Image (cartoon, rainbow, N blue to C red; front, side, top):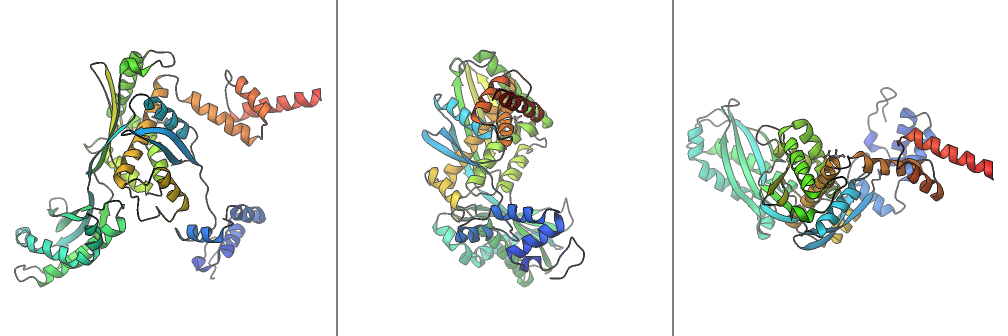
Length: 446
Ligand code: MEV
């Protein structure tokens, strides 16, 4: 191991896990022994399991634990689900569960898959005449399909594969720049590896075709890159709930009509104002990401996709919509979601496997519906709080519990604090002072 200065190192990846921790603890911390203990505390006792987890990434030194919770009572297309959620933010699972329960008795969520098309691109430059290239495109397409048939064979057997190859002339935006835009169906897999393998082969095949084609004069084609696009506006699910306004019930401080009108206005605000839209959509992704993580899908891809879709007309807007017509309150969302229920980590991660079992081994399409429903439920719960009690009431309740736990409050203290903070401001110091006073009082009386 070569050490250049105290904070850099070469050959780190070759160190054992113990050596990695030792180096980190010594170079980045004062309390080396304590840090070493903390990092090792989260190692799995089951060595095989630890090996599996280490295999997901590189330079692993420990496991970072997130809570794994569930939101029961989700009715989606008539099926009842208990939905697994992995999230560190308090109130999210409680909010999802509460919204699921609310809609449970009002027909539940309806999810409809609009389409499941995934997109990939081969970006290339070429200095020749576009019409010449275009005239050879039918032959090029056939060549690309033939050259990748060994990669696509299994996917074709499952009903998927390459759906369409388009040649796009991008030279108005960038000199000599063209693109193959490829549509894929990847069935129950997210399909990233499949798509990227096909695209890279397409790149090689295209370059070869152009270099060897008699009818094409300019032979020099440069493949810049070949990669899937995480923007998939045609891998889309629509999820909705609806109710007669009078069946919505009562809300804190207001009747159902007032609630529906305020809720509708809140969605309008998130549609026209990007500042509000960002927070509004963040709330939707609180739910979406939690299920995506629990099922070991790619939450970064899901986020990027959703946010681009939210800005599809040039302005970032709410992903969800609301209408009030003929006394009916309707709340819905169209959202692109690329998820898999086979491949990737879905079976390798032991708890992701359990999540999918809990959901009844859903297909990718069914999982799209479940994830979208949780996102809409989350949004419903957040906006319901915002337009009625405000969000802090619920959040502060959870915060109080976290602080009480942190200060090792016992059951009696928790009960007293819960009553006291019903009408007092909650902060770390106010809870600490309350507990200190209670404990002093107890010592005095003992
Ligand atoms: C907090 O994580 C999410 C909310 O801010 C969402 C919203 O404002 O709609 C409560």
